[in-house]
Structure formats: C-alpha cells, structure tokens
Image 1 (cartoon, rainbow, N blue to C red):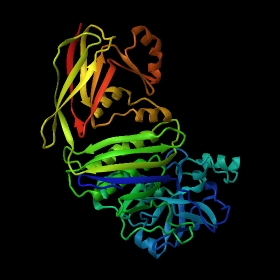
Image 2 (image 1 turned 180 degrees about the vertical axis):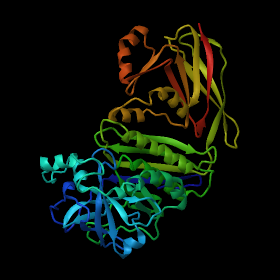
Image 3 (image 1 turned 60 degrees about the horizontal axis):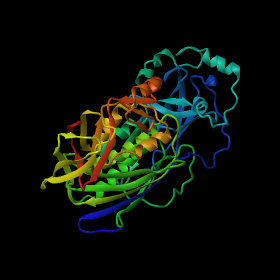
Image 4 (image 1 turned 45 degrees about the vertical axis):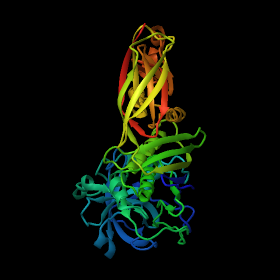
Length: 504
C-alpha cells in the first residue's frame, strides 16, 4: 500500500459465495403436511427469534386457504398467531421464513401479513408443498397421489373444504410480504439513505446496526426458526484494505457491490466533493475471461464521486447477471482505487481541424480544446489518417468522451439478447472516460452481430444478412465507425462535437 501527498490507494479484495441454509440437529427427513389435508381450526406452532438467537414457539390456528391468492395454483394458508408476544407485536419484519408446523409436520413458512400498520396477528403461510415443487434439485418431496392432486385442482378459489370462510376474502387484497431486515454494521447513515429505496425494492428492510464486527463464527447451532442469511462485511481501516463476503445473487449482488464501494470510498473521503478516483480491477467469472475495470470518476455537479463510482461498478455486475442464457458464477472481484485530492473533470469546449478538404490516405490533425474544473484550458492534438476506402463526399468526424461514443454506437443494440460470453466480451470493449476519442464516420451502414462489429457493409451483403434482424441477432446503424483514435488524459472527459470535411 503506498501513500503520497496527492494520491491514496485503496484496495478491495472481494470474495463472493452462495449461502446455503441448513438445520443442525433437525431430523434428516421432516414430514410435510400436504395442502389437501389442511383444514380450518387446526392447531400448530411457528418458531421465530424475538430476542437474541434462540427461536421461540408461537401457537397458531389455521383459518383456511386462500386459493390462487398469489396467482394460478399459488395458494396461501391463512393463520392467526396466538400468545402474548405476537398479540403485542403483530406480524413484524423478521418473521419472514419462520417455519410453521401442524401435528409435527411442516406446513410451510410465514411470508405475508395483513397491511403495514395493523397489529392483527394474522399471517399468510406459503405451503411447503408448493415451495418444494419449484426446486428441481430437491428429491425429498414425498409422492403426492393423483387423488390428492385432482382434489386440490378441483377446488375453486375460496371454495370447498379447507378454504377460508368468505369473511376472510378481504384479507387477500390487503396481504403484503413480510419484510426481511438486513442489518448494516459499520455503514454510514448516508449510505443507507442513498440506497435505502433500492434495498426496500429487493424485499429487504435496511436497519442501521450498532457495535463492531468480529471474525468469530456464530457459536449457537442453527435450528428451525434461527436468524440466518445475514451478509457480513468486515473491514480494517488502518491499512486501507477491505475484505468482504457477499451473496452471489443476480438480484442482490449488483446492489450489495454498489453499497459496499460507496460506503468504503465515502468513509475515506476527507476532501468533500474535490476528490477523484482511478479504478483498476477485474471481475472473475468462472469459465470466462476476466472482466477488466479501468476507469476514472470525478463529479462535475452535486453528485458525490463515490456514488458515481458505485453506479459504474453496479452497472457492470447488472449486465453480467442480466444475460438470459447462462447463470454466472462470480468467483471474486479485485478493485484498486487511487484517490486524488482534486476534482479532475474537463469539458470539451472546441474541436477543429485546419483543413476542410482531404484525400484518402491523408494525415489530418484534430485539435481539441478542453476546459478543466478551475484550471487553464488544455489543448490536445490527435492525428488521424483518412482511410483509403473513404468515398468521395462528406466525412463526419466525431470528437467525444468514451460514454458518448459507447451510447452512440451501442444504444440501438441495448435490447439485444446476448449470452454470457458475448456480454463479457462487450464489457471488455467499453471505453474509458479518461480518454478523448476521435471517430471517423462513414456513410455506409454498419451491423452489430452479438459483440461483433461489421463496418461499411455493401448493400448486397446487407440484403443477405437481413433475415437476422427479426431475431434481434443483428442491429444495423446508418453510419460506420471506420477508424478510431484516442488520447489519454488525466481528467474525466465530457462533451462531444462533430467536424465535417470533404473527401475528394
């Protein structure tokens, strides 16, 4: 780790793993209660943690079954919790997933409550039978007879034996999922304020924790009703190196990455808005090339620089997980940030060239004038050679930052369905925002097939490939980027201008 007056290095080594829930000391095979045998008036028990780590029993009574409450063939068992504690608290966040038993058989898990503010201890239970049906890897589901299945399917919503009385039909319209609290220890209030809405939209309730972290494993045995699945974040601020353990989850990992990066950078930021970061790192996806991350972040407005860095990193994880063809297994992430005690942003004010006409093969110099934040103008000259294939007429030259060029070239292809390999290849072709790019735009069309670019295609070739358009395998752009040059800058560049010259 190195430090000097202008630059501070921050290193992240992030390892991801998947949680697996299990019960210690529980029977190897728990008998389940089929939905077809559930009747109003049955007495049972649920287990949840009210304080500490020990699950406590709650008596309950089955009120009935809400048929198709969550969609076709997605039923919900309505129960009323009994006892001093549930009568006082009602159904609250943290009870989600609490196991429910009737006559020693597993009925399901608490998942819904009535409204948000009511303290009525009425809850919805997702049947274990339906949960097991969606798990293709589970082989412990007892055989369900055809008679049982036909009996269940024959019952209409809110009718027949075992269903809830008509008086409870209104509950189906007021049921809301029980929030699962996610406790953040060592995270700032600013972090939870900025990412609270996204956490809530993922079905979690963000809670500010107190105390410190520990490397010690949970000493208590995990049993039905225990509180498990908490994400642990461990960090040491002294050496500016952080180690994190996180979920490998398509829905949560991008969000967790953004929260982690923002909190770490914000906690080390001693210079307010006048700070910039250089990022060098990689995402390791099992079975594929590494996804490289090289970028620079600095704020030009009121958005904090750590937040911009977090959004940029989260966007890469979202693209990896959003492919429709293969589930990625992220084995690790390494990110090295250099913190610069200055706001390194520059706006492109002017782009020009000394010539208005050129011939194929000529070398043309593009002059760009940039205005840094509270600094003197910077002039950069970029030589570009006119392609020998350039046709007579007008040639457009785009001078821009990397983000603008990526949007111009990729925006029409955003709805394309890429597999994981093509997604990673496309990510590794993203341009950095600390370079100024010069692109020559030819009037011939350009095709994008997966992550491949086919410039200046003749009309005859386009006609042959036209059948790919209907399958979204090919996107056609009106212009081709026949040549691209760039120059490195020590700023986050923004802006774009177009120069036109005539090709003789």
